[in-house]
Amino acid sequence: MVSFAKLKNLLMLAFDWILHGAGPADTCHVTVTQPRFQGADYSMHTVFLTCAFSASGCSPSSLQILWFRFVTSKHEDLCTPGCTDQQKYKVHFLPENNVSLQINDLTVDDNAVYICGIAFSDSSSPHSKQTGDGTVLMKTGMGLKCRILRKLCESEELSFILALTFTKGAETQHSNGKVVSIFMIITSALLFLYSTTVFMFLMIYKLKPKLLKASGKEGQRTENCKISSGRKIFQAIAQELQKQKYAEKPDTLEDDTIYQNR
View (cartoon, one colour):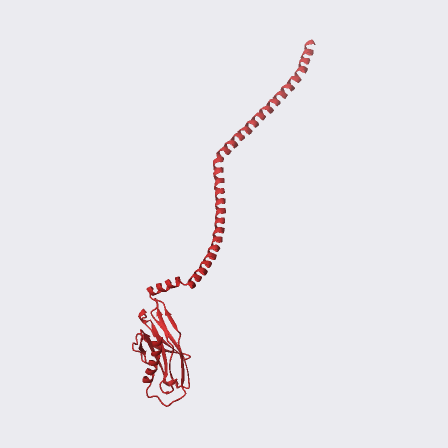
């Protein structure tokens, strides 16, 4: 990072040139902080790079926000303070001493170190013009994303992540296995009941003619028994009447004999 350190010195000289002709020395003091890394997915087309600063003893009316970027050992002025490409770059002032650089039409060619500068133009204090340490912007294209994933596959960290994922997957699979087992048991019971019902209907359907035939024979037997029993009763009555008739006949014969003798 020797070249980057030299860049910061050049930027400070650029600040002095941009803000040449400032007033007498004062106590204005500025500090600037930036996130070290800003990632952007290959599907993103706009990104916002943030920058925070604090200022003491400085006049707010003379605040200037500047942005530079460091690409392949050279720096480019983006907004100083006017932006070189107003369609591509836009500077936003946010509450609580926060600023941001909006980058539109984002491509992998925009990957660089973006440096935020804060300056108060009416101050001659050496601390009134400061830059942050820079934010590395990295937009991952499909090819770069695959290379990163390949490197991750070779690392122990990914092995640990995969182990955790496998464990969670095994637990989920075990839980799903229990649900499937219960479902199979219920399904088997329903199929058994259905099969039993169908079997019973088939058995009744097949045995119904035989049962009806047997019932008909039994009814015929009963009817025959009733007829035979009626005949027997009738015969018994006839025999009884005949007996009574023969029992009365001797008296009649005796009377006839007596009448003849007279």
